[in-house]
Length: 250
Image (cartoon, rainbow, N blue to C red; front, side):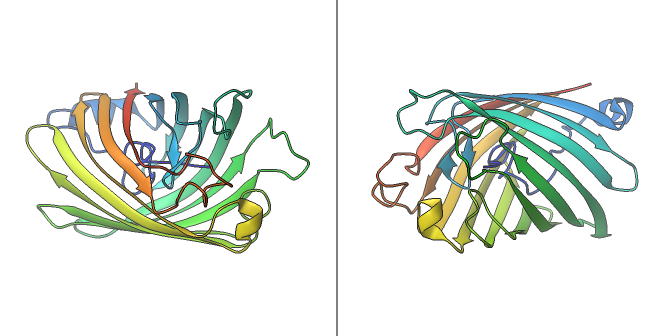
């Protein structure tokens, strides 16, 4: 399942705005060209608040191609482990996506994206794979950037029917290269029994710093699901602190 916040703000959630270059890095942005590769290590891969790697470290990478007109395509991969104990084989998630972003007005951007979530080592006869479609909007108010997104899947993870996730976020510059950000969202699924949880609320709050092409993020991530509501009694939905480091090149 996907993608928090460079997993949740670094990856994310997740999913709200493209990372900005720090002051003085405009030349590096121009020289980098349409292709970028990002390597990430995170203490816990969270997707919409839920741990995707048994509350353990995950190693991730992405490849992106972006045109001047706003069209982009890419691929993103991570190791995953949906067990509660971390004693099973670690499987893989591969996301393939394409989309388009455009400026609606000064400081206001909109985007659409289609993502195919692929799990090549799914251990069950019923596949994990699914499509999801996203519409997003962000507005820079000068002192803060507000964002919102809606995601729709016609047949969600583990063939659990139609699903909708809606989320909103805020990003506030602090000092020098530091930024505070937070997100809150809600996931609705047609077949909750098949998925393993009721519909849930998820949120995160943290601070990130950009050091050239290196981004470091620390945040608290949680859901409103109790242990008994989380896949029959697991800790995959409990709150926790997540640290993430990401390096993008060229």
